[in-house]
Image (cartoon, rainbow, N blue to C red; front, top):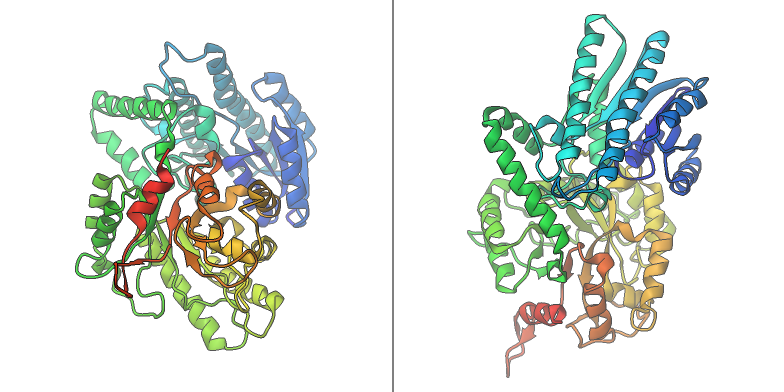
Length: 552
């Protein structure tokens, strides 16, 4: 354990919470600061189980006295890092937005950041070293942000102040680092608080934080995660300010309106599609469009073997160009069945699984997907405990060396044979052993959970309550929507068409329309159908099943 502390404001959620977990993993002791003490205590307890000492300080940093009091409370602690993350935003016309809320925004985003940086900087100068990272936004690097005017102005203040102070410190030969983290959209609760949706896809707070800390240690003053945002902020220098402001205004107004008029028609639903022939990914998108889908899932090659086309041959650019026209904004990739990280019997099988998973993550990133669905594996004769340990080992080997913005979504399994992942607790056990657990998510398969013994028909709320208690509903990255041919707890894994199995239509319809899951992709993997008088299954059911599930 490092002797120094990292002080993190805004630690109760989002980027601040991600900083806490990452710095804890690096061995820092923590001072967790935010208004919501209950959340801070939960986080502190989580980190305590992993051996991290945390001090919880509940404070409303919009009050100047609270900032001074915070510094007094930590006066005798050896502080090596300050993460100035406390802040929030709002979206709407300046004429209509709440003035009191905007004054509070200025108090937190500007005044608290300014005061804490100044007080900590003086202290770090005396101790001859330390890091101060102010969390700004890419908004602070743009000239203005109509419809988020106050928020953009506060972030511009942070970026400007940080750059100026950094130069002053450099010129005096100071050993103290001051930098500004300027991300674009990040998938946190910020959007809900700010009443905004963004056109650009958000990055995960975990990726944002890992990138920020890496650049901070390199003493980069302005840190902008992702090449897309770097391009946006760089190109902005060469676009006339009036034009750039007008573009931003249009986007913010559009985003605000989208938030206000959010409808259930925005349910993300699609199916597994193929990828073959000359058109490859373009063909996949066209197939999804024919079903009335707005998301899709595919394999990057045959699921039963290792034969793969080169990434350059997948026709990705043409596919995405068509996808945007077709209203498809997200895709899910499924890892091949040949990956079995749980195998402890054959070392060559395990090694193949590790190597191929590494390649599939890179291919998933190249496909511009953030979700790679993975079967946890089969333990064979070694037993579930040994299989879980081996899966953890394999995931650590892969993820510890990989920085792609891709989640591994562990699929809930039916428990056929020696498969692991048949209970929520088994999936949680994998989470517990993985170093970069922030890179894990869950694929919730309705057929599999039914066959594993979870009763969606008679205890829908109870099943999801149990999942939330064990893993957390926020960990579900994708649903597989399938009926089951088997009775509850059969452990057999045989999919049925929607409404034609033992789960039935109503629980599946309820899940698709559940407001908690409206933003989560829902993928159909139901069996193809036979034409009348034929025995070969040649007719995809997805257009009709999607329409049924979306019907009012």
